[in-house]
Image (cartoon, rainbow, N blue to C red; front, side, top):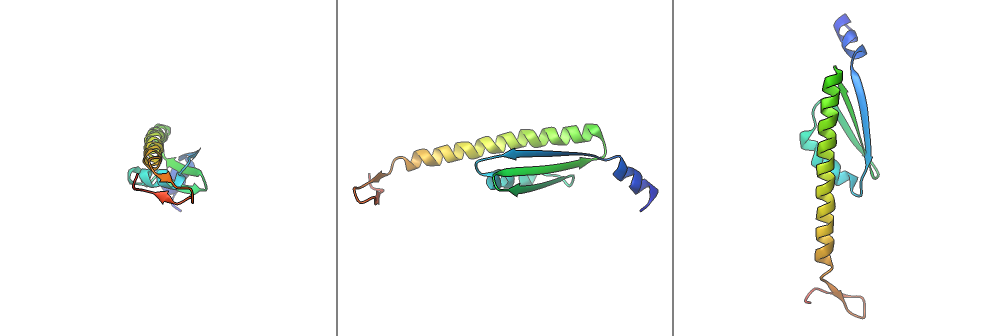
Length: 104
């Protein structure tokens, strides 16, 4: 490893953001287009874990801030979509046999 690479690795800053969501996989998928090469995201059950590594503290702060803003927007969109689908589903009626009647 060259001296410059060693200095670069030694001086990099890293942050891990771990959040939980009702539909973590869907929220993570919504975040994917905005991710950069400095980010690694994985889903573990109901949690999303994003590791950010940047060479400067300011760059790390900026990237984490962008990620958190995008995360909040994606989470709200998923929550609203779920609520909308649930409201649409609420219009269905079940007969006495438990069968769903979609004609009402």
